[in-house]
Length: 239
Image (tube, helix red, strand yellow):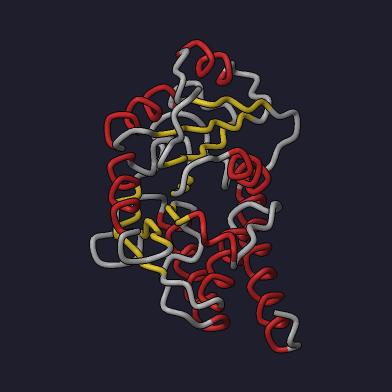
């Protein structure tokens, strides 16, 4: 019989062969067992899933999907998670495993801990255009939705499982799913805390958030639309 994990970390992957093993080892070093690491691979052609399977680690669960989609991958991994604490993060080494351990530690005093680029101790080393766009989207989200969160599109988080008694993670979209999740959590009265960290752009591989200027603009437009739709939902009483 397998040991019941205390913590489950969900990692979606698509062509992360160069990063995934290093990230798994870092999480195993930083987070106290019993730990469960769930890798949800969207049929990566570079052999990411084979890299994970070859590790042969009992605490690592590999889910292979033929579909693609970030929010849907997180949703699938969360459905499989067995821990009382659930975290999720990107696989590209931009979100440090040591910070995930810090987020988990914060859950003694809150329901949700977010790794934040835009509070004290946080920074963002990406291209200035991407940093500016992220600040603009977050400023717009705070203006329209309210709340105290400064990094609405972080995507780096640890939560108590009980959060899902109050909030549902919508399994579609890229970063906009996170905006909705955090907005709904604040509306439900859950305790949300941000922890500053240094976000560093990926050193290997291709960013999936903005591989071209057009997709970058489309992604930002979707974020804005989701924020507006959430405000309309509130104003029309459909919360």
